[in-house]
Image: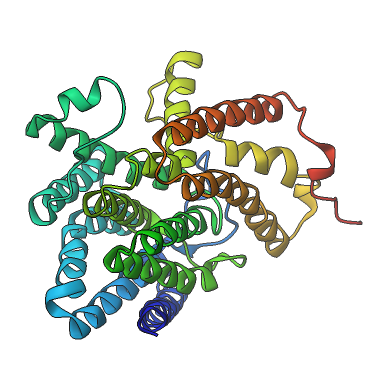
Length: 370
């Protein structure tokens, strides 16, 4: 019953606050909406508010407050401390959403600051990896701290990178949080279980307005904050439960992480461009261009928005393909490492098949009759 209440509070708060964001975007589009339609990763058809992270943050804060009222010295205090640590990452992303003047380096800095605060406040730094060489180095506290900050900032940045279509990043995070909740329930960790369930509720409240109609965007604030939240919950699970393999979080988030690593390789090595330069060659962008753009010029704005949204389920499936084995083999580093390698090979095979116009024809969205 307590889990249900936590989930409902997060969902309702997120639903209401996001509704307010949508309404504010309609009355003051110039201040909070994305009116730039020209970028390589811009696929929306009308001005849309991009501060949807406010609703998710509100849902999580309300749920954490409820946990504190139920158990101030048990679940409530670490829940509130975790959200407080995430404020630099969230506010930096939110500032970019509103002002468009916060650079990627600055956002990463504040996300790293949030990760550093979490190490200091919650003591959830990485202490084991089950990888040869790293475990010998991680016994040194400075190295462990740097590795933890790098991992958390990397996950947050990767969630922001896949935030390209309605419902894509947010639903992938919800799927990963469900995986975390399943393992937390398996090992009997009420804190991680409650916070993961609250995260799912907050995301669903946002998704009601985001998918498939695209009335609000997650924005950098929402993406960075969700990535931070997901990474920190995974680290809390490891710190509190020695039976969980340290490779479980990697398998859980391997889709956005591998997307990021491959994008860096593709830009720098294959194209000779800066690794931070945006492009339209991500896997989700290719799926949209190859499978969803049939007869695109003849469609109205609503139908184009639908095509945008229908890209996301392809990537949800990819996320499920990493979360299911992560949950199945949560305590086996050998199987999890094999899963990471298999996922990477499958991703590359799929990417090169699509980029060479060899994707399955039956996946192409049908043209509209004239």
